[in-house]
Amino acid sequence: MKNVFATMAAVLFVSGALFAQTFTLKSNDLGGQMTLKEVFNGFGCTGQNLSPQLSWQNAPAGTKSFAVTMYDKDAPTGSGFWHWVVFDLPANASELKQGAGDPAKNLLPAGAIQSITDFGKAGYGGPCPPEGDKPHQYLITVYALKTDKLGLDANASPALVGFYLNASMLAKASVVAYYQR
Image (cartoon, rainbow, N blue to C red; front, side, top):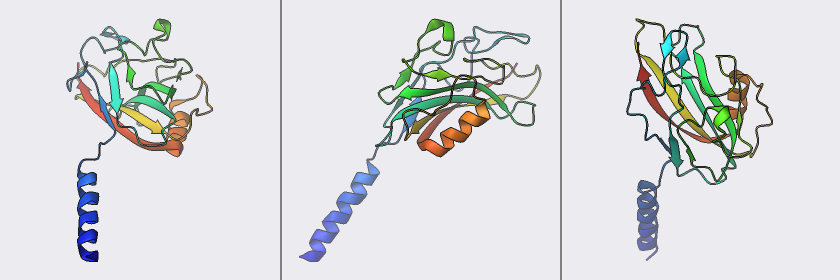
């Protein structure tokens, strides 16, 4: 009888693990390629500079806040390029609307902070790789965090925010989009 119960418990555990939901990030605006909607408007690029719509689901238990970043590892800087850094998004947030990266539009949840990017200012700065360069990979990541606030402000550098994100991270989920001009 003990073996029957042990077998049933193992089957239930395995089946539960098979159907467990994973932390997932999606975008209705991105289909693998950035478009002129997301592309920066400056430095020779003529896009609309709209941050893409993002939504996430199945955050892990204990999530107290979220953060979102966008990073170009292919930028010819030797250290990549940070295009967007937003943190202190409340635990009940599950979406950022298209254009939320524009501080003037005030589309982020109350208390959320957009810190400076490698463009030197806060808010979303879209792709603008060098003309004729290979396609650049833009990694957009949402972080589920175990703290409600990072304790940083809008002047925090992307590297400092990244340090705090990694120290507070419960899970992360990403989408990748490419752009070349």
